[in-house]
Image (cartoon, rainbow, N blue to C red; front, side, top):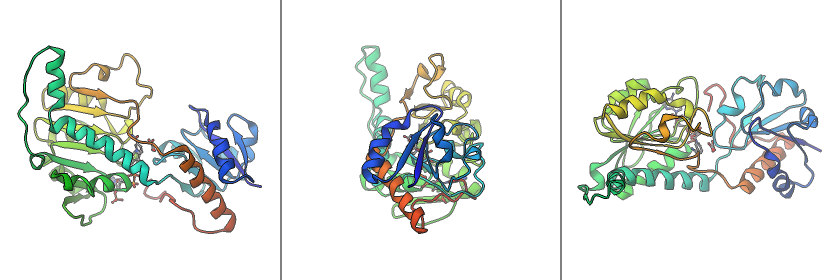
Length: 308
Ligand code: NDP
Ligand code: OXD
């Protein structure tokens, strides 16, 4: 029997228990802070409790219940353990829908129409074709890559930035540190879909915003720690940036006194851009438990040398 520990310092993951048992009735499930978690072979995690894996001598697999793994690996003793994550086409579709909404919000100037409505003013914003709106995707992985495969078909001028170079139909691809400034210089709507790593922490900062054309906008769906909030507020205040849709925050829930709640031009959403269905999460964990038992390759294993 394999024991799966449901670990989180911020949420009760026990809702996954019936779904995991439906996927594999032989599993033994323990939910943190049940001390039986410490004997588990598999950890299924979101925001893992501090230094927890070091206290789990039988641990053989760390599985994020989400697409990102930053909050299950940060500050932990991984001692070479494999780390897996969730990859799912419907999760990618959800992100596509959210980002498309954000792009339309700015391209079709719904932000301006909503500001006029608040003042009961009838102002018709000038409309422009999609080809005039340059969407820049930071990150071309499972999520950014999916969006890059769709947005050009709507007529948008799409570019992307990743660590490694590649060719994507209808997309201008920039790569590496040297590609960042030229990528930003030709972006009107910047979309962040990067994983959080030491290289990407704080990447949405004053220097990045200054490299964007005046009047550009931000859709941020990566992680809160990518964004230097004070730099965003300053760029909005100066008028260099026109607006921002922010879905992820360094502190979640966003504290009531955070100035982003009320900053003009900012749409705050509560980390809702997308999520995998819970039965999909459970079945992917159960599938990897079976792979582990069989000594077979794991699905969606993260390259811990890269950190994503
Ligand atoms: P992937 O690992 O599939 O893709 C990551 C992409 O980022 C790759 O294209 C990679 O480049 C690029 N990248 C990584 N580091 C760098 C760097 N230093 N410089 C340039 N490019 C870099 O991740 P996903 O697409 O699955 O997910 C991305 C993130 O989205 C998650 O880590 C998570 O934080 C966030 N997320 C947010 C959700 C929300 O609801 N707000 C929901 C789900 C995920 P390369 O291709 O060259 O390797
Ligand atoms: C994820 C998330 O990483 O929901 O899947 O943020």
